[in-house]
Amino acid sequence: MASAAALGTFQKNPTNITYTLGQKLDSRLNSTPTPIVFLIGDDISEQDSLKSLTNREGWEFETFESAREFLARPRPLVPSCLVLDVSLPDVNALDLQKRIAVERSGMPIIFISGRGDIRTTVEAMKAGAVDFLVKPFSNEVLLRSIRESLERSRVALDREVALRDLRDSYASLTPRERQVMALVVSGLLNKQVAWELGIGESTIKAHRGQVMQKMKANSLAELVKIASTLDPAGGAIHLA
Image (cartoon, rainbow, N blue to C red; front, side):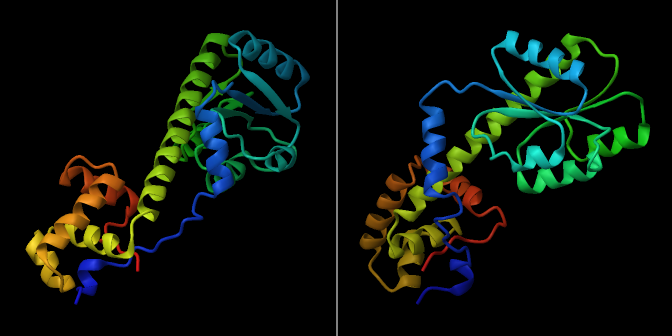
């Protein structure tokens, strides 16, 4: 019978990325998405200036006077970033950054401030901010930070789509194919896998071929890499 240690404990959860989200992400990839730049701040002139700047670049622009308003807005499924004024009326900007990291991972943040504060700057950058700009700053400096932020967001969304596709492929494996995949990526040879599962080696070869085809892996090394992506904790993959 199969070794529990070799098979591992990775659990299937096909709802990790919902079908609805998958549909929306597919729709995003099949079109040319317009990036969105968000701003949280109550300075009217600042809002007008950033809106004019982003419109010239062909980006959408949305502004919020409070963190509450921004958090109530559904997560965008296009490249986006947040320009965040440190002086928020309803919440500490650094606390908001932490909350966004949990609730909207992959949302790049650019801090802007009316004064230089080394402690705040260091904390924001350590927590993953793309930039911390002290007023006055040039449009080109801000644009450079926004472009970097939108690229980070695009990469994160593409990674999410790729992971969903891998999970869909993994979910298409039969229980036996999942067992074979778990043992193969753990380093066992076909005859060792056959012994573990109590079936013929020729049957294992057939299952292994199906696994490679369904997971779109061209080599064992690629299959191991896929398994590592699906199971970043490093255990062998096993779905009963």
